[in-house]
Structure formats: C-alpha cells, structure tokens
Length: 606
Image (cartoon, rainbow, N blue to C red):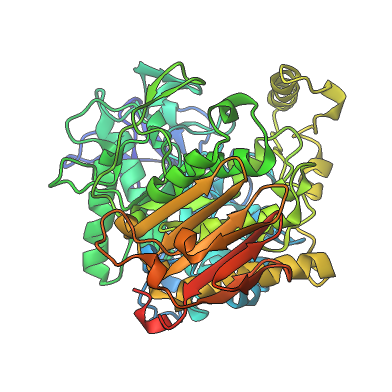
C-alpha cells in the first residue's frame, strides 16, 4: 500500500505531510509551479493525514475528500474507485424537459442523511420528478447548516453520510430514473475552517465582496483557485456520477480575465460530457437578467446551459400574496405575470424602482429550456424572517397555491419544486447554523435580528439560527402527507406534472408559441401553448371565459381565428366549481383550469 500526496502551496517554503505523530517532508514538483508531492508507503484509503506549512500546525488538505472529524480535523484518504456502482445503464438527465426538485439533505427527512433521503425517492418518482437538486453538501463547520458556508469543497459533509453515503444516494436515484444536480459555491468560502489563504493566494484584495477578499480568478497565481473549482466541478460529475451543477450567485464572481471562470467551467463540463457520453450541464444563479450567460460561446456568450429566473418567482409571488415589501415593490401586476410567462424575466432593460435604474436586457432567440423557474426555493422561503412558505401566509389560499403551481409547471421553462411544496408542507424552512466558534455564532444570531428589525420585526420573534430547535422545526413532517388538505395539493401537483409530460405543447421551450391575455380589473389571466390553455382567476368573483379568450394564436402564428373552435376539453381543474359550459370555462375565485380545443388530440398538441 502506498499513496502519493500532492498539494498546491506556493506561499510556504516548506510543506510536510503529517500522519499521526510523524511529519514527512514534501518535495517541490518541478513540472508544476507551487505544487508539492510526497510518496508515503504505509498510507492508503482510510489514512488520516494533514499538511504542515513552514512547521506550523496540521491543516486539512485543500482538496480533502473526507473530513470525518470536522473541518478543523485531519483529512482522510478516499479511493473513489472502490465504490460498487449499479448505474451503468443510466443515460443521463435531459434538462430541457425535466422537472427538478430542490432539497436540503438535513431537513428532507427526520434523520437528515443521504441514506434517509433514499427512503423517500419513490415519493418523488410518483410525483413525476426527473431530477433532484441538492443544496450544497461540501463540508462546513458544525453539524447543521444550509451548506453555503462550505470550506472543504471536495468533501461531502460527514453528518450527512460522507462520500459513501452520497454515492449510495446518487446510485439509488439513477436506479429510479432520477438525475442529481449538485449545488456548488465558488463565489466565497465559509469563515470557519477555511485555511486556504495559508496555502496560497486563493483570494485576492484586488476585488472585495460581501464576504471579504474575492476568490482569486484573475490576479497573480489565479491558476490555483481556478484549478481548484474546475477540478471540484468535474469531481462531482465523474467521481459521484452527478448529472449537473448549479453554480451559486455567479453575479458575485469577480473576474476580469478574457477567459472567465464561468466560461471555463461550462467548457470543462461539456468536454467531460463528451468523454463520458452522457448529458452533463451547468445551471447558473444570476440576478443580472443577462442572456449572455446562456448564449453559446460562438454567439458571444458563456455557454452555460440554464439560468435561474428569480423574477418569474417575484412576479407570481407578488400577484398571489399581495406582498410589496423590499424587491417585491417592483412587482404585483398581471401584466408582469404575463411577461414572466413569456420571457421568464420581467425586467429586460426596464426601469426598476427598487434598484433606481434600468435592469436586464431582452433575450431574443433564447429558448425557454434555458430558464429555471419556481414558485418556492430555499432562498425565497428561508430568507424570510420566519421561513414561512406561501401556503403559510394570510393572503394565500390553497386555491392560489394551485394557481401558482399550474403556471410554474406548465410554463415554457424548466420548473423546479422545493421540498414539501407539493403537499403544502406545514414545516417552515428557516435559516439555521451550527458555528462552533461562539463569537461567530453570536454574530450571526445578532445580525439576523438586526436585519429583520429594520422591517418591523420584534427581535424576540426572529428564530435564532444557532438554536438547534430552529433546525428541527425546519424538518419536513412526512406523517402529514396523507391528511386530506395536504393530499389534495399533492394530487394537484402530480396531475399538472403529468400533463406537462403527456402533452408535447407543454414540454418544449418554444417561447414564440406562448400567448397571454389578462384582465387586470377582473383578475383573470390565460397562458396559451398551442391548442392548450391555462386559465386562472385571481379575482374576487367567478368569471366565464369563452374560447376566443382561451385559444387565440400566438403573435408569431398565422393560425386561424379561435372562433372556429367547436368545443373545449377540461384537462385539469383545481376545484369542482371549474366547469366547461357552452364553449366557455367558468372559473370560481382563486381557481385554475387547463383547457384544450376539442378534437385537437394529445398527439397534435405540438
């Protein structure tokens, strides 16, 4: 047994590998500047080790594969080739027609582990989910947290089950036809257990961020940080068989280089996809509303496969709940909902009163499959003062929640659900941490209270992120799924996902085939896709909508007048009061119907 240890550390003049009480000197690698190496005969899988820089204390490996004793403890050697995979027949996740499901491992089940999540995968299969998107699982300080303060990017969090547990989860997902998307964070690292700066210039004072010095993507020695994140991205896809990546807040990348790290990441992933002969993709979170993120490199873009569209959520949220605080001040009209249903983004060069400037740009020629949309996600729930879901809000009826579900799932984009949304879960999703440094934990708790005090919240009403009870209350209660109210919501989500899968008109991203109509005064809105229409009523009174309001052609189509439609078929209704009568649909308040022209047939809904 022998193991070759390597580490990039251009700052120290001496590096030792520490195993037990012994320190072995490492030698500079002549082939690659800044790298050190040492061959240790008695080391191998399962060996705990650390590095000492210039005779200093042991530090974890920046590329550690496992931190079983926490982020400050020794690293452990992992043999990724030893796991017995059973997914040779898996052919990958096709993102353009997928339905995604975002989940946080620690709160998805009572046990909060990778293995426990496996026990709930059949629920997702029945729901119609194509892929799960895991909140970050890279090792972070403490046992509980959202994962966005990770410090050991290559090491799955030990409290979740470590490397073997994650592989078992991915293998089990693929066995059930479910893909796995990994959320990764490359715009910063967490404050506790972060020793990268001792090794080399992984950060630069050239740029500053909300977290301090920026990750070094464009300054001297930037090859170290760039190599770290690119290799990390490929590791999740190759060693853990994940199908795609979600990059956290790419608008916070600070990179003035000609070949941006975002472009390099997309290129590397696509090259790996060609080598492994399965689709692999990159999704970016960005609030810039910049179509260059998803345009091809040949078209002057960065070549990312898809981008989160937060404004789709904001437009729906404001219309459904009536909230106008913070950035919701920019939203609230049905006209904006209609634009979001066509374009995903609402601000495409328009003036934003909240930002006090114009924001975004149009995205002509960009298909809907390049936008990820949602009614809930971890941010839009967890960054609220008490982590309340829309179904917890006073102005949000279950009928309105069903409206939001239908519009999200049946729009010409890639829909994503957030854990428990499908049954209107009673559990909140609050912000929680487990910082082992008491001063850091106190600072986080006090900062959270100050943040929401400015919105009128009493400090004592803000959950303490460091309190383990905050974490415990955020766990899903699977025992409630079969209760009548929750079961009805689950049935509706399952139905609209099934419609999206059955009807070709509802499963492509042709934005030019989308038509919208609305009456702001009466509160109704229609989204049409080919011969299919989704009609909603957010008004206080019932409305009757004739075929002419439901099945008109898109602006780009020379199709005949909808007056020729002989009848309507009701494909789905959120409540019994929705009926089709005399060539029109009757919608009670807070209801939604999915309609198709009689005689169109499911196979012709293209």
